[in-house]
Image (cartoon, rainbow, N blue to C red):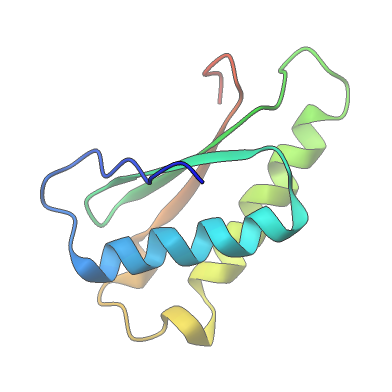
Length: 97
């Protein structure tokens, strides 16, 4: 399993736990999940192997985004400070959003 890219040196243990939780849960349903990248208490980017030229890619990306947002609202992450400020962003393998 690839390590989470912390992106920002200000990432806390809470945020690392958030990233790991998001990745573990999403990987159960989506084989396309790659790295999870965090910008300190703002944006969580889910990198995928989705090809932006494939017809179902947008639907899968929206499903991943929705599931990620639901994870952020879950009981498991309720104790994370400022969890409401996080957003989920899904990137395709060609780095398109």
